[in-house]
Length: 244
Image 1 (cartoon, rainbow, N blue to C red):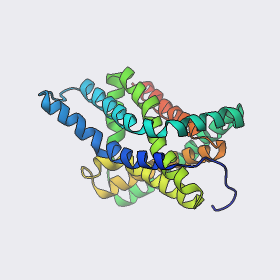
Image 2: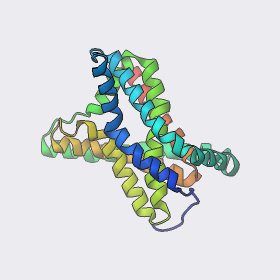
Image 3: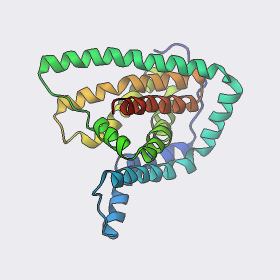
Image 4: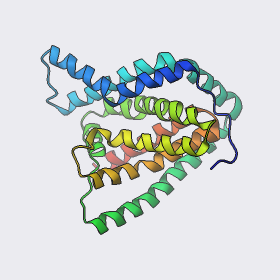
């Protein structure tokens, strides 16, 4: 994969510091902070609506940590997107969507073979929880899943990891950003399910990780991957509503 490289930007010390602070908040810190606030005010999450608000606040806290460090980077990347690519970005996004669904189809075939061969019953807990919340409190989840989460996850996975590694190794930029992106989606439930189920769920997120990294590289702007991430999540929500 060490062939042609694109000008996808350069991280400065401030972005690296923001990412180092942001990842612990994203994985656990924000959740602990909200849990502490709930404990101090003697509140409990006893409804799906409460859980949706909890997830939204956790995302906002993580963004609050990240944005002060990444705002100059995001502004510069948006300028590049509008000045350098323009309408061609729509084509990049279209290819990215096709790439995502094509790779997802291939990965689904592989995981189906694994499921049959190993005789396990897979369950994507993260996906199941999101689907329940979406059908219960749509406005909150649409805001979180389609707008805020794509911005947060792209800054952390494509901004910090992919962009940070890209100048040194295109292969490792792809590999590590994809792996970390997948792990972040199974991390919260990895202890609640068998390792093979976690592995299958991990594999299911790799196509999105690749497509998002590709569209960032192709467009030379992280905003393209943020838009694609939002589109993929929006399509997933539409499918959930369509199955109601």
